[in-house]
Length: 298
Image 1 (cartoon, rainbow, N blue to C red):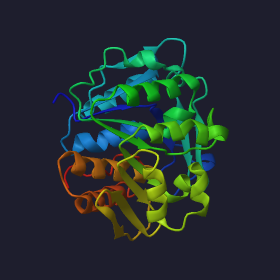
Image 2: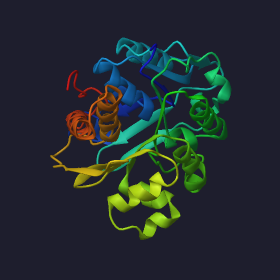
Image 3: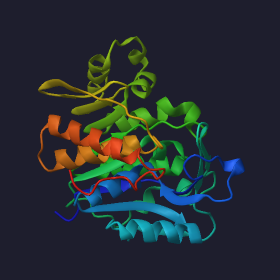
Image 4: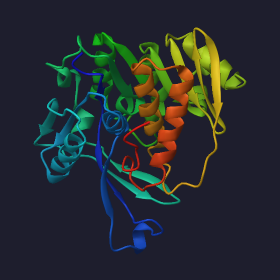
């Protein structure tokens, strides 16, 4: 197998104040990279899986930095195009407030199905795309559907809903088609209840998972506040979790996904995958970076 997983999605330069400081009062900002799919790729690469990331970046210093960083993690980036007319996206983290995106008109927001030209899918174990890609523009939405439609291996989707994007006010209509085309769904309880019309009346994660599975996924993982669980043909399995104090919780879901996916792609059990996901998610929250705290072994 040439690749264990190929992911499609946007990665941005991420700026954040040092721990304990706020943007308007600091004279320094930490520079990093962030993107749901590439965050997961970093985690998988650190765990020894062969991964590739497909996207577009601006032909700018921000794009150079992202490529250098991701390539340095062992991620294959040779299918990443450079756009000479559009910039690399940017996100600004403000502790206690949230995240502000500057990605409208970015290079990735205009990448269409042509970005997949030449991408090797026949010899790939899995593909990954998130709802972020569905929501940043009509062309990325089409590219995500094309990836799921062309994949020969496991098709993985995380809805990963975000406000303030091109399609955020129509996210149900845009993201549900991704869910209907996937085999493994990794999601949060609240976002799944929002996406599925009938989910608003569902009681508990197992019921939500069954509603999602009726749309197509063979394996549904739901991250909740006090537990995580998975529905497969063998039934529902859950694991209670404890949430410790976090330096920065952003990126924890992507890290959970990486740990879970790594175990499942290697033939591990659902219980092993849940435990690995929880450990990886907790590790990432110890750093202001989306990926720096990700472990190099399970």
